[in-house]
Amino acid sequence: MSIWLVVLLGVLGGLAGALQSQFLGVMEDRVGTLASTFITYGGGGLAIGLLMVAFGGGQWSSLREVPWWAVTAGLMGLVVVASLGISVNRLGLGAGLTLFTGSTLILAALIDHFGWFARANTLDPRRLAGIALVVFGTWLVVGGTSNV
Image (cartoon, rainbow, N blue to C red; front, side):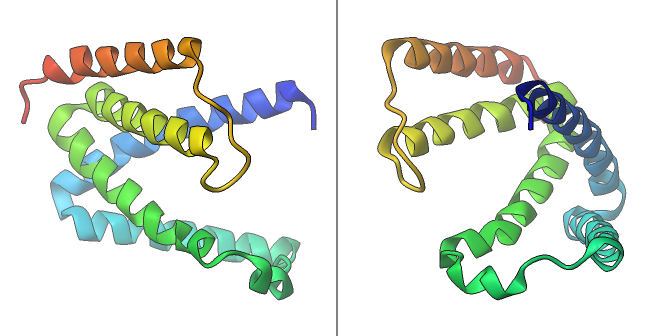
Protein backbone atom coordinates (compact mmCIF):
# COMPACT_ATOMS: atom_id res chain seq x y z
CA MET A 1 0.00 0.00 0.00
CA SER A 2 1.46 3.37 -0.99
CA ILE A 3 2.19 6.03 1.62
CA TRP A 4 -0.24 8.39 -0.14
CA LEU A 5 -3.07 5.92 0.26
CA VAL A 6 -2.18 5.45 3.91
CA VAL A 7 -2.18 9.24 4.42
CA LEU A 8 -5.50 9.56 2.57
CA LEU A 9 -7.04 6.85 4.75
CA GLY A 10 -5.72 8.62 7.86
CA VAL A 11 -7.29 11.89 6.71
CA LEU A 12 -10.59 10.17 5.89
CA GLY A 13 -10.53 8.55 9.33
CA GLY A 14 -9.97 11.93 10.94
CA LEU A 15 -12.84 13.47 8.99
CA ALA A 16 -15.11 10.57 9.93
CA GLY A 17 -13.98 10.92 13.55
CA ALA A 18 -14.93 14.61 13.61
CA LEU A 19 -18.35 13.87 12.15
CA GLN A 20 -18.87 10.90 14.47
CA SER A 21 -17.91 13.00 17.48
CA GLN A 22 -20.40 15.71 16.54
CA PHE A 23 -23.13 13.12 15.97
CA LEU A 24 -22.29 11.48 19.32
CA GLY A 25 -22.61 14.85 21.04
CA VAL A 26 -26.07 15.36 19.53
CA MET A 27 -27.20 11.86 20.51
CA GLU A 28 -25.69 12.15 24.00
CA ASP A 29 -27.64 15.37 24.55
CA ARG A 30 -30.93 13.80 23.50
CA VAL A 31 -30.81 10.16 24.62
CA GLY A 32 -27.90 10.02 27.09
CA THR A 33 -24.46 8.46 27.12
CA LEU A 34 -25.41 4.80 27.41
CA ALA A 35 -28.07 4.90 24.70
CA SER A 36 -25.88 6.88 22.29
CA THR A 37 -22.98 4.47 22.86
CA PHE A 38 -25.30 1.50 22.30
CA ILE A 39 -26.66 3.01 19.10
CA THR A 40 -23.14 3.67 17.86
CA TYR A 41 -21.87 0.18 18.63
CA GLY A 42 -25.08 -1.49 17.49
CA GLY A 43 -24.94 0.27 14.13
CA GLY A 44 -21.25 -0.47 13.74
CA GLY A 45 -21.74 -4.09 14.77
CA LEU A 46 -24.52 -4.52 12.22
CA ALA A 47 -22.43 -2.91 9.47
CA ILE A 48 -19.33 -5.01 10.13
CA GLY A 49 -21.45 -8.13 10.46
CA LEU A 50 -22.91 -7.54 7.00
CA LEU A 51 -19.44 -6.86 5.58
CA MET A 52 -18.13 -10.07 7.11
CA VAL A 53 -20.97 -12.03 5.55
CA ALA A 54 -20.37 -10.38 2.18
CA PHE A 55 -16.55 -10.58 2.11
CA GLY A 56 -15.58 -13.35 4.51
CA GLY A 57 -15.32 -13.46 8.25
CA GLY A 58 -11.61 -13.11 8.86
CA GLN A 59 -9.07 -15.47 10.38
CA TRP A 60 -10.78 -16.53 13.61
CA SER A 61 -8.38 -19.43 14.08
CA SER A 62 -5.56 -16.93 14.64
CA LEU A 63 -7.38 -15.29 17.54
CA ARG A 64 -5.47 -17.51 19.98
CA GLU A 65 -2.26 -15.73 18.91
CA VAL A 66 -3.58 -12.30 19.85
CA PRO A 67 -2.39 -11.05 23.29
CA TRP A 68 -5.20 -10.82 25.86
CA TRP A 69 -4.83 -7.06 26.24
CA ALA A 70 -5.37 -6.49 22.49
CA VAL A 71 -8.82 -8.04 22.77
CA THR A 72 -9.84 -5.20 25.11
CA ALA A 73 -9.84 -2.82 22.12
CA GLY A 74 -13.63 -2.99 21.96
CA LEU A 75 -13.89 -1.94 25.61
CA MET A 76 -11.51 0.94 24.93
CA GLY A 77 -13.76 1.89 22.03
CA LEU A 78 -16.69 2.15 24.43
CA VAL A 79 -14.69 4.61 26.52
CA VAL A 80 -13.74 6.56 23.38
CA VAL A 81 -17.31 6.80 22.10
CA ALA A 82 -18.82 7.67 25.48
CA SER A 83 -16.15 10.23 26.39
CA LEU A 84 -16.37 11.92 22.98
CA GLY A 85 -20.14 12.14 23.26
CA ILE A 86 -19.92 13.74 26.69
CA SER A 87 -17.02 16.11 25.99
CA VAL A 88 -18.27 17.28 22.58
CA ASN A 89 -21.77 17.81 23.97
CA ARG A 90 -20.48 19.95 26.83
CA LEU A 91 -17.36 21.61 25.40
CA GLY A 92 -18.10 21.77 21.67
CA LEU A 93 -16.56 19.81 18.82
CA GLY A 94 -13.27 21.71 18.61
CA ALA A 95 -12.52 21.66 22.33
CA GLY A 96 -13.68 18.06 22.77
CA LEU A 97 -11.56 16.77 19.90
CA THR A 98 -8.58 18.89 20.94
CA LEU A 99 -8.70 17.43 24.44
CA PHE A 100 -9.09 13.92 23.02
CA THR A 101 -6.23 14.39 20.53
CA GLY A 102 -3.88 15.98 23.05
CA SER A 103 -4.33 13.21 25.60
CA THR A 104 -4.04 10.58 22.86
CA LEU A 105 -0.73 12.06 21.74
CA ILE A 106 0.71 12.10 25.26
CA LEU A 107 -0.12 8.44 25.89
CA ALA A 108 1.05 7.46 22.39
CA ALA A 109 4.39 9.17 22.99
CA LEU A 110 4.85 7.28 26.27
CA ILE A 111 3.87 3.96 24.67
CA ASP A 112 6.30 4.59 21.81
CA HIS A 113 9.11 5.80 24.09
CA PHE A 114 8.99 2.82 26.43
CA GLY A 115 8.08 0.29 23.74
CA TRP A 116 5.21 -1.07 25.81
CA PHE A 117 3.41 -2.86 22.97
CA ALA A 118 5.85 -2.74 20.06
CA ARG A 119 9.33 -1.49 19.30
CA ALA A 120 10.49 1.61 21.14
CA ASN A 121 10.62 4.99 19.41
CA THR A 122 12.56 7.19 21.82
CA LEU A 123 11.35 10.69 22.59
CA ASP A 124 13.85 13.22 21.32
CA PRO A 125 13.85 16.97 21.99
CA ARG A 126 12.01 17.70 18.73
CA ARG A 127 9.14 15.31 19.56
CA LEU A 128 8.99 16.58 23.14
CA ALA A 129 8.72 20.16 21.84
CA GLY A 130 5.89 19.11 19.51
CA ILE A 131 4.04 17.44 22.37
CA ALA A 132 4.53 20.51 24.56
CA LEU A 133 3.04 22.67 21.80
CA VAL A 134 0.04 20.36 21.51
CA VAL A 135 -0.46 20.44 25.30
CA PHE A 136 -0.24 24.25 25.25
CA GLY A 137 -2.63 24.41 22.30
CA THR A 138 -5.04 22.09 24.10
CA TRP A 139 -4.96 24.36 27.13
CA LEU A 140 -5.67 27.38 24.90
CA VAL A 141 -8.59 25.72 23.11
CA VAL A 142 -10.21 23.98 26.10
CA GLY A 143 -9.45 26.80 28.56
CA GLY A 144 -11.52 29.19 26.47
CA THR A 145 -14.59 26.98 26.66
CA SER A 146 -17.34 28.29 28.88
CA ASN A 147 -20.03 25.70 28.04
CA VAL A 148 -19.30 23.32 30.91
